[in-house]
Length: 156
Image (cartoon, rainbow, N blue to C red; front, top):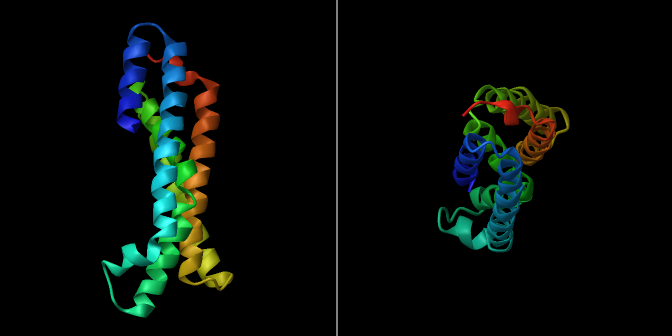
């Protein structure tokens, strides 16, 4: 859905219809949220069975189940973040998603994972929480930048 949104943005901006591009992105984000929300729900409910396909070791499975469940909580946000990020690419603006991803995943998620896991003594669960927080941060930052509308001025 992210790539489809990028294509719709490029086409709409090329047709000098930025409002159509914006509407397409929000709509694609909504549909992606529904899809990933359902996938996340399946992952949360059936985490033991899914992880059981990969390992029979109960110690490993416990980490896998926890990870799958905690990370799945961020899917609703990540659904929008993915679509919004790709929409910048569709507008020909590759720097904006690069900078957002650099900040969110390298300068925020990794240090947060370290702090939560080591300093707050959450262990692996701290890493899982950091991933979910980063998904949410990506969506919020992308939405704020997207709403500013500078991407609409790109010549496609």
